[in-house]
Amino acid sequence: MPVRLTADFYARSARTVAQALLGQTLVRQLNGRRLSGIIVETEAYCDGDTPDLACHGERVNHARPTPRTAVMFGPAGRAYVYFTYGIHWMFNVVTGQTGQPNAVLVRALEPVEGIDQMMARRGERPLTQLTNGPAKLAQALTIDHSLNGANLYAPDGVIWIEEAPAVAPSQIAVGPRIGMGKTPEPWYSMPWRYWLAGNAFVSK
Image (cartoon, rainbow, N blue to C red; front, side, top):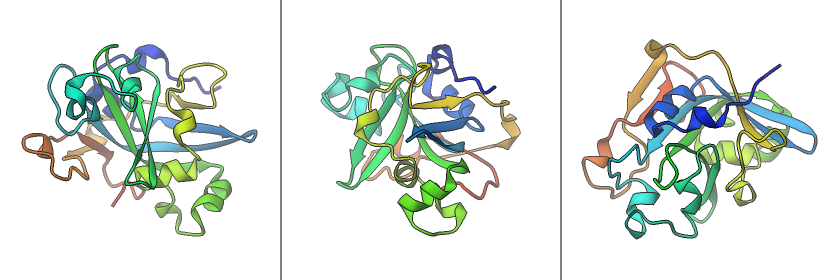
């Protein structure tokens, strides 16, 4: 029987969790059905004590919580869901220690269960384009602000991540994060994006 990742899994640095999440299964329970996909791409933000000007928790209000970013400051193992560009929801996992803004953005999934429901929300399209981006997967799994702060390891939760065998380091590709806009260096080029090398479901 699948096991949900525990609080201890998330209570580590963002970069550690971002890599460890690859190959794990994100599950959304909706109307009595499971929608799920294998996590194939992630990005780390505000790793440890190092300032990160690409991170909401650092960039806004000088690393102090705001109504939008409060969830990001802990505890670990909660969902941080935010709205961007006025049209998209983004699903993040809170990591690290309470009081510090650490999180991992889940960027892409390889769909496994509930593909028909995902297509009903995303429209008929090739399977590889169904959840190959953070806004796409949020739409496909109906992830929105109602899930902000959701406990990802609660036994009665409606969104969680299930444990799967660890991915070998040799399978993990590394590079700069995407969509950094006017973020200054060195944060613009920080190699804190991770993905399964050669996987067809990674974002373009």
